[in-house]
Image (cartoon, rainbow, N blue to C red; front, side):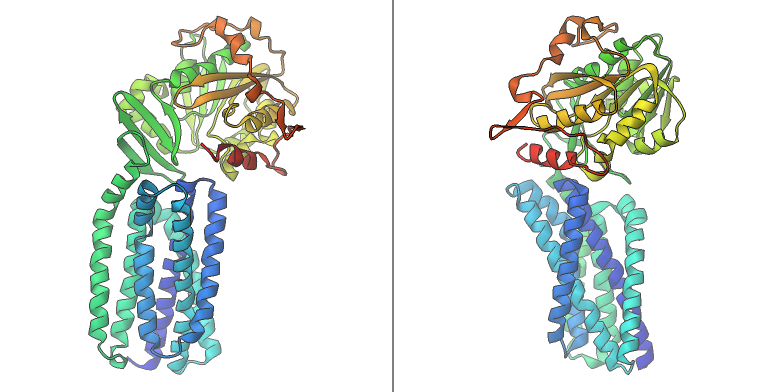
Length: 513
């Protein structure tokens, strides 16, 4: 193979390793989002650290002026090892080492792989130049391959690798690609390298471990991840939107989304009865009901207890959650097959987008969404969102919003309440003890006045009674709306798209839990 043909192979190699680099970068961001929470924060940190590592690597590459091919080969060997085993070891670190170690490990591995990636391109550019291609041309071509490879890598991860292979297998698979490129380049330039077979043998040994990880790593990592949950995992799925985990032990079925507990079958009825029955008593008509979130079907189970319940529209972003709740024996038993009821109309759409595009009005709207622990969820706790919800209520309609814990996160709870109130609606605050969660809060809102003394629980329940309702509106001093720090009352301001301060309050409140 002549010099021109070899230079073309270098361009191809640069494109392929660039694809691998961007995939590792997004894998690290996804790992941080899943294990550490706050996806925007973790993606920002991992991208910043990865790029910083690339800068450091590019600077260090100045010292690589001889043995360019061997240098490139060993760089790829190390990328294959560190990157390939990254997801696998991340779960191990999270399961067995002290809290906080996992973030340090993730940021360290991101910086290392970023640094190694930063060395790759300068080495390839120098080698292309040595083959007789002018420096300007070789740099432009290699950089083009790098940038184009970055786009391809991002698309591959989102639409193929993550949904088909998952986090652990994807890392091992990409590591195998890095290793394959290294071995091919080693063989291509074997006439320039003494003892190239010894280097190749090292690569083969690395390959054996990577392939073993590809086939066995996920099973072992599953045992690591089991340590993160109280009970045995009976179902796990990585979807386009989140990671679903279902556990069960001694009759207690628990659903987790991205590591966050959604319910425990031992006490979920306390949560869902308070979510549903007070607001159903506030309104006279139950003809049209909208449920935002609640893909597990448990809120709908409570709604269907009313004979006059009409059409129920369920809007849940992730079809995998609804499918699981519709087919899993454990969940169908719990929700009593509510999602199969002919009254239920299911739509898989972002709640904000659904409300923007809908012209329908509802008697009751339940907002049963996950806590505002990232930017995309925070959008669903803003004045703009609650204004949309208000605009879809009938004149005498009402809504109930799950609003996190007034004990663990009082500023968050009362900010949500103030945000809803700022839309012009009348609000009433409720909270209830749910043992698996702790004390949990809700906000009811309506254009009409809300008189708790006039509310009545009219459906069959396991926990809630009419006599209890008034007590659920009483809050202790440590969970009251007047938050005092250092002798000063902290003002409660509405959460908006322009000033999304709720997310910061949420992170501060839950950092110790």
